[in-house]
Length: 114
Length: 118
Image (tube, rainbow over all chains, first blue to last red; front, side):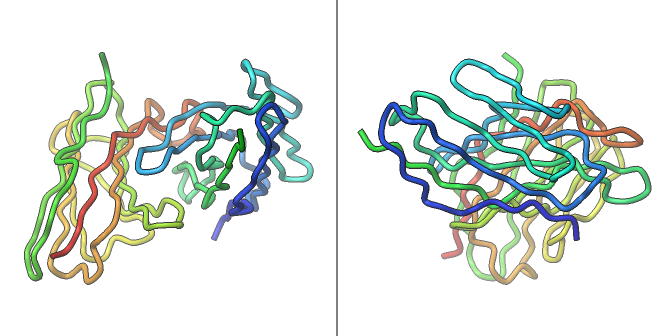
């Protein structure tokens, strides 16, 4: 079973601070990595994708990938109360016979305290 | 606007009853997926379809059935064999078929159907 692991949290950060969300994965050959944000009672929304080692920035969000360590992270700068949500890490895995799917972690709940 | 529409938003099922959840997309995506989410749990894959007239079981297919007769539509039936159906059901689609190549564009999710057994 190819797994994606996240700390369930809750992760609490004060408003304006940097929130750091982490994810590890077991499939060494995974090539695509995604972060989704899910507000309570709502469906997941794609916020970041990353494919190469290093950092990718989009506004207040930065995704970081280290394939050697099988580790992907999401940094949220200047955290706002509206960032309070559960963040899901998703990793592309080969489910066999050349069929690829996303495997999701259970998510980290982030709470930004005003 | 393109997107995925799930209906109904809320559904109540009586014991022993089959119910069907609708999922329609106008994104021209080949691949479609059904997930179940329980409180505090991650997404668990029920069924997926990478092309019309073909679908595959996911990790928790028992008690569920699907069809994919049209590219736009991927309905999920929760049968009476599913003993614990109360959950949040999410349909997703992807422009990647996921056949022979990685998922590059991620999945787009519908707004979900919340199913409750009464």
